[in-house]
Length: 115
Length: 113
Image (cartoon, chains in turn blue, purple):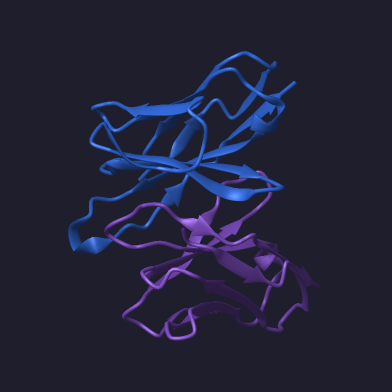
């Protein structure tokens, strides 16, 4: 079974621009979560989507948004980019909740550099 | 919210020795504790996880122990090999209610040949 895929893998933007990152979950997984990873703050939760609905949100400004499509693919958008948004953005998918599992499987990430 | 602390931040071991990483958590409602391994240029890879109804879990050379009373859990790697060199993260969440994982700061493990 193919793993979580993220596109693009690398991205360079300038301050003030906006960016859209894409995530395709493992086949059959309906929950998609997004995390930001930086050397200073570590891994921080952004938001989680299930059946096209945002179920949980972390403590990030409104410039960070996301959505999920009917095929469970997800996108996240960052508007008005700031230098501090430079990070590795990770997507994780989880299998259906039968049995209470919430194991999250991560993709390789998108490395965003803001100049 | 949940606060997860992880120690040590770096760990150097001789090949064949054991490595132990410890984490503490603050939210008594947390009941799911996964461990991830992250190699350079890759996303975190789940290596083992444990739920609060279990005190210990083992998978070949890797084991995790959980002490709910003290709110701490540990990762044990035995017979370390060079390919075990990576950054290891512990995490905690309220399973089934909250898909938000709160991560520790990570431990860089170096296995010396």
